[in-house]
Picture 1 (tube, rainbow, N blue to C red):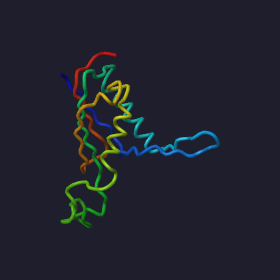
Picture 2: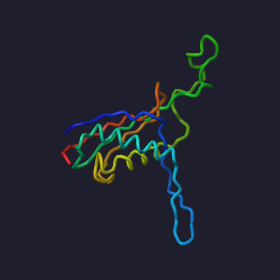
Picture 3: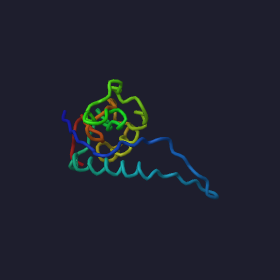
Picture 4: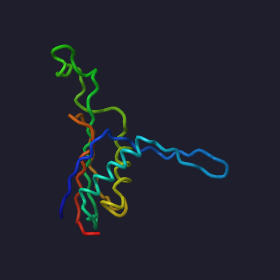
Length: 145
C-alpha cells in the first residue's frame, strides 16, 4: 500500500447542487467560473502527482482545507500580526465541508481513481492556515494506467 500527498494552492471552492435554467426544450447547467478554475487546478496538480498511476482496490483520502484568516481577527497597529483574544481557533463558517469534498472527488475522478465510488474512507478538516488551498493524501494500491 502506498500513498501520494500533494497540495493544491488557491481558495477552496464548494460544489453545490447542479442548477439548471430552461432554454426552450433543453436545460443548461449554470456554470460557476470560480469553481471551474478550482477544479481545473486540482485536476492539474493531481495529474502531476499521480504520474500516470491510478488507485485500484479502494481509496482512502485525507483532505486538509486551508483558509486564511480574515483581517478582522487580527489586532491593529504594531500588534497587527497577533490574533485578537476572541479570534476563533476553528474554521466554523462557510463553505460547507461536504460541498468542498464533492468538488475534490469530482476533480480526481479519472485521474486518481476510475470512479469516486471507489473511495471508501474520507477524513476532512477545515482549518486556518498561512496560505489557502487543500492538501490531498491518497492511500491505496497504485497501478500504472
